[in-house]
Structure formats: C-alpha cells, structure tokens
Figure 1 (cartoon, rainbow, N blue to C red):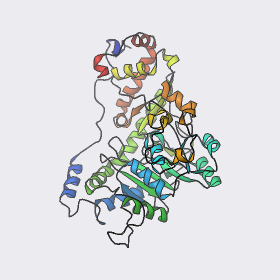
Figure 2: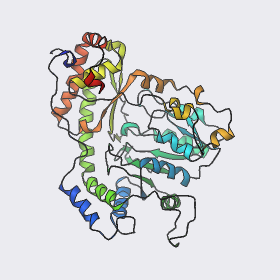
Figure 3: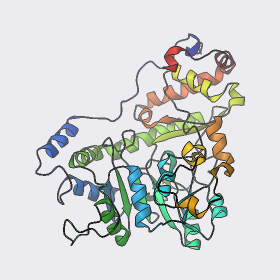
Figure 4: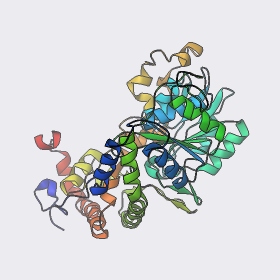
Length: 422
C-alpha cells in the first residue's frame, strides 16, 4: 500500500459518500401538498395523523404520537409514566444529553449506570446493582441502533415494578428477537432530527402498546387537552409539543424510503463488520447471536491505541485523510458534563432538594470512561448507504492504517494542520 494520505500519499477514496438526507421530487411534492392544505398544524385528519398511523404500524406498536423532538418525546414519556420529584431513573452515561436531562426536567434524579464495553449499551447487571427503593424507571438506549438486552432489562423491571422507557432515537426499524423496538417496554421515544435515519429536520415520536399511556402522551403533547373536551379545557400540566403538517409531510415522504435504506445500511454494515473484525486493534460493536436487526444509525467500534501506536485522534485524522469521515463520539460520560458536575438543574432541583448530599463527582463508570477517553469511535449512517464497493473503501482505509501504523507515530508528532483544525 502507498504512504498514508495524511503524510502525502494518495488517499484510498476521493469520492464523497451519499449525502443525507436523500431527497427527491416526492419530498418537494409532499411539502407543496402541506402548503396548499387547509391547515398547517394539528387538525385531526391530515399528514400528522397519517404519519402516526404508519409509524406505529412499522414499529409494531399500537399507538404513536408525533411530537416536536426526541428530547420532548423523552420528557413527555416520563411525565406520562408518572415520574415525580424524588424518583430515581436509571440511565446510561454514553448517550446524548437528553436521555438524562429529560429525567431532571421531570424533577426526578438521573442515576448513571455503566455500559457493556462490547455493545456500548446499558449493562443489565450494572442496572440491577443500581436499583434502590426510590428507583421508578429505567431508560435503555439502543445506541447506534443496536437493540439493548431487553429480556434482562424487562425482567429486572418486573422484579422491581419499574417503568421501561426505550430511547430509540437511533433505532428506527431495529428489531430485537423478531420484534421492532419502541413498544418492547412501556414507552418508546424516537427522534427525527436532521442526522437521524428518518428525518424531517426536527421532530420525534412516542410509541406504546398501552392505551392509557398513549392517551396521557397525547394530552401532554397538546396542552393538556382530552378527546371529548373543549379547546380551552386543560386537564394536566403540559404544553404545546406538537409538530406541523410540513414536518409530517416530509416524514411521510421520507418514510417511503426508510425500509429500503434500512436494508441497505444493514447489508453494508454486515459487510464492514466482517472486514473490520479482522483488523487487529479494531473491534466493531458486538452483534448478538440471537435474531436481531441493527438500525445502523452509527457504526461504532473500539480502537486500541497500543496496537496502532497512536492516540485515537491521530488515527481518526489519518482515516479522514484517506477519505473516510469518522467521529470520536461522545467526549465525556454525561455525569462529567458541566450540567451534572455543577448540578445546574435550574428550577428542576428536586433531585438536590431531596438529596442534599447528591454529587455526580463521585460517579464512576469505568467502561464508559474508557470508551469516551480514547477507546470509542463511530462512522455515520450515510457512509453505509453506498454500494458494496463504497463499503470496501472504508475497510481498505482501516487496513491501510494498520499496515502503516508505524507512520501514525510520525503523524502523532505533528500538530494538526490549520485546515483540519478549521
């Protein structure tokens, strides 16, 4: 192989990967349909309701409520589940902020539980050890689109009468033992933010099989209204967390592409998994042996700096020079984010009011800290939307960096270029 591209050699790849989102004439037509409709917001018989029905069926749930964002979905789910001040909710620290901040916004206490070092998902044994008499719920995150170990987590929830809220923001179309995620627990939350595998720019959804929970979610997302009530009749603390007809129209259009894209990502991800697991020092996110389908929002992997002789940041810089964009992932466990380190919960301070000795400085989740600190990284979902040959380019870049790992030490001694820093 040639010299590393970061040191002046020819890159493995000089073509862009598929853009995201994949847009076409049907998306434009959907927006025009909403533009010329009688209503641009929720009215009971438009794009929103059509999408809710389609998405519920796709995720094999009885009910779906479209909301303003994935963050809002989590907050509404917690409120609908009856989580209150003083309650504890188990969450993983390797996830987006909202998984834990939504708990604080419900005036409850986020309790961080370590992840499995191979799957990056919430560790069921660590969760079992974290249960206290105040624990009321747990939020497994299907990180990157890989379903969490739901059998063990649901069994734990049954033993302790806990509510299970799935954070499925990465997991559209993912399956666990033949069942789509989202309604495996009591409630499931999805995101339609710009990077997600189904997107309208912003947006989210809550799914459930429980009609009573669905009714609470629908009321909370719509200013506390109820189906037979008057417009200015409000039954519970809530707000306007609705989406617009424009967002729902885009979702309906993009939804038509979702299943084919999901199959394409899975095909390419499996191909890449088989190649990268052969590269010393690279360990792709573990895939269970039981039946499942990965959502492949991210392709996560562990990186062994000792094998390559260079820190993660140098490896990723060299990988990008070869034409393969990648990310180090979450830089910190959530409990080390300033919000939690400083306890800046604003008006949602019940966690500290009821537990004045609460300090996230004492939290230690070694697996998460190792992954954030230099062992974890990921590729974005759009790189899995190309051809098998595109996927092989990714594998060749990893293989090239391993073959030239001694040169990575030279690269490590160089400061990043101004272009890279920008």
